[in-house]
Length: 131
Image (cartoon, rainbow, N blue to C red):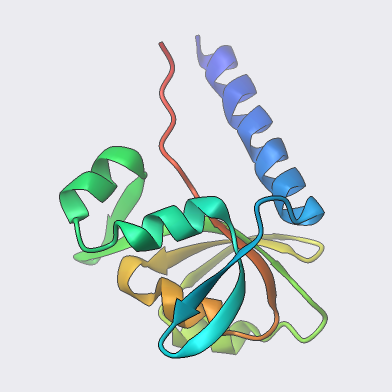
């Protein structure tokens, strides 16, 4: 069973990275009066439901760190990437593979992260279940 879980997680990671790299599902969202591009369909869905935390917790794998809610995400960045700017939003930087980076973003700061000009694509994590 553990082996199957690792296979599923590995497969989901692969497809998340593939989605980011190919730019599939890239759309726009208006964040704080700025036109922001490169939000995935998952990210747009999350933003549209952001006011209903109970519903978000059913659909997304939210983490509580020091009493604050975070959501994991994968982002693809360009050569202007500025880690300090990402950290200023309160996001926690994870693994970096080339120009793809895993991060944890405070749920109330996703729009702020999306305004960063060097982000080419941002895709928030969704909850999975194995039956």
